[in-house]
Image 1: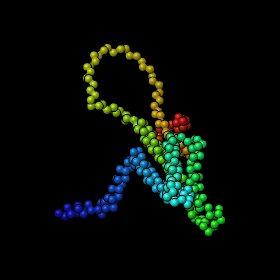
Image 2 (image 1 turned 60 degrees about the horizontal axis):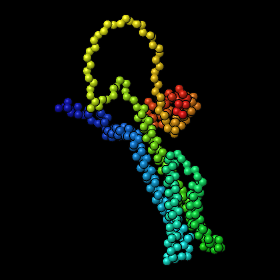
Image 3 (image 1 turned 90 degrees about the vertical axis):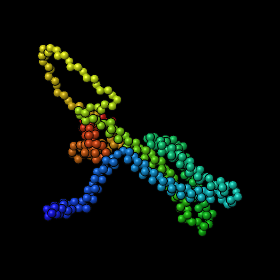
Image 4 (image 1 turned 135 degrees about the vertical axis):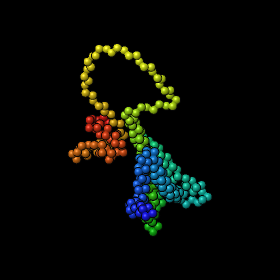
Length: 308
């Protein structure tokens, strides 16, 4: 009984060191090891990118809508003038600013699509139309505010109101310009994530000595009969084989952004007077150790010209 009690006392957390804090930290370390592989998964990266972009776009569209409500009221006041609600012009004036904003958004959305493919809308009227839409909205919001100055009624002029009516149209135009850029960059990043993952899968090779798996429906090879022994021919001296050069695996072609980062890392390593290694590549690009070594060997052998 005393021996069991002594053994139980030796297994207490104070004796073994496995306290509650140690067990808690150990559980966190185990969880972090499990998450490390998931975080590098390209599908998870794409989903996270899509979620973050959606949140950003929702916020931008919300504030863009608030700005359009403000500018629509300013444009309506400019066009309607002294007209009353019984006048059709009073109601038609409310549709002018939404029409201008809708045209601008449609143009910029298509611009986002072609920007994601690396193309630029190189046409003079493309830029002219956007400038005309912005200038029209800005003028129709500002002119009613500065009219008292033009008529000499200084007491009716409100500097704060004039500044707000001038700034908000510019902000609305800027948000409309930024939204397509965000959409284009999201597409570029997602394509880059999957392109890097596909290259990593293509360069994966089976382990040495392993045989390709045979499907269950494939028939097993038929047993062959033992060959009949034949008289051995006269020995012929075999030629001495020359030195066999080890096969060098070509490194996979890297996307242009990753290739530029690798070139910059190599230039920095050479400038510091040290050898360019796979560790330098892994610091700037998320590549496996095997692929990083192949890329480093390719740069050392061909000075990076094989990637061009």
